[in-house]
Image (cartoon, rainbow, N blue to C red; front, side, top):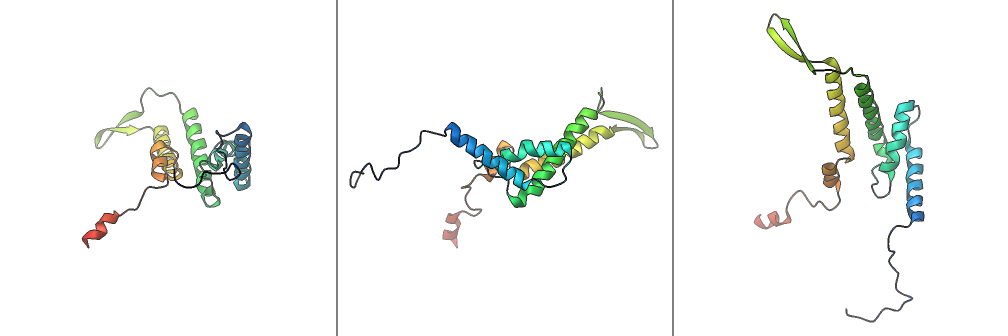
Length: 157
């Protein structure tokens, strides 16, 4: 190492890690932010889902709950509640399809309950991708992804 030897007064010691107190402050800050951004007029189930998800997204380590994302998080909560309700209310089915006979012959169709679950799941999955909540989506949102165009391409112009 070059240069003068540092004096103890100039050195800022590194912390060994997060303390219990700092973790508690971080969780409290995330809870305050989630409460401040919670939309008005939420139903009971959607509010409980918001209270479960929003503090996790507002955590400074993740920092995905911003004022302009509140509507997307709200839709995520609604889709999660709807998916949970549909799965709970769906009768136990031996098969997800049924056959009908019509003028075009035998046709295999999906049950309406299953179609609703599938559509709600697709809606939920698109919101998961928007918020970066799956491992692959989180990796795509990570900083330092680089530019779309390689800087080496400019050498060939």
